[in-house]
Image 1 (spheres, rainbow, N blue to C red):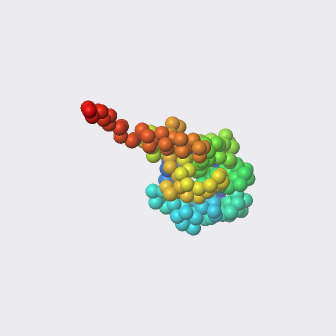
Image 2: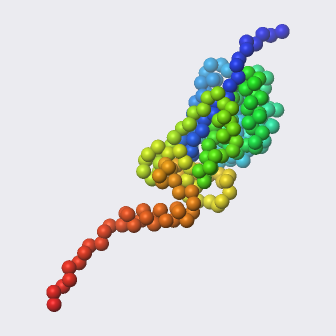
Image 3: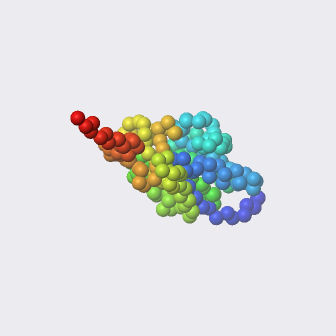
Length: 212
């Protein structure tokens, strides 16, 4: 019988707003695992078809081969016994069962690394990320750059689209925003946009009355 040394399992959670480098960081860790000659499997939600069907692709075009699955249960059934490291991107798009799946895999001695949004476009916690952050051994929160002022940003501003919580898009629909410039309500967005327009408008020159 072959002897396999015991590996303590773990769950690593990479979170943040859009354009904060979550997928890029996930790919970096997975590449390092492969350099260390560890068996790696990568999964992504089947609904995420923005860049490629069979690759995990970051906004900055970092790529790694990935398998698209529709449910969390498919991940559990497709993980090989000899796999050491498992990467899951856009984990917020999976069903609630993803928490149990990640725990089960970690309990089997596997290193599970997930990445996803911790807040939705309204600035509210994005399930199942809060649960994953609670049970994970390591949590990394990344910040983007506010598209308005350049300060650190941890919110995703939807600039086009409807009211659905899940709406796929990239820079065509979303911007990273800081706390100050995040505008979750549509009416408030319009108010602030009008305020900005007024602030940027050059002051009117006062004209002296022409003497009669």
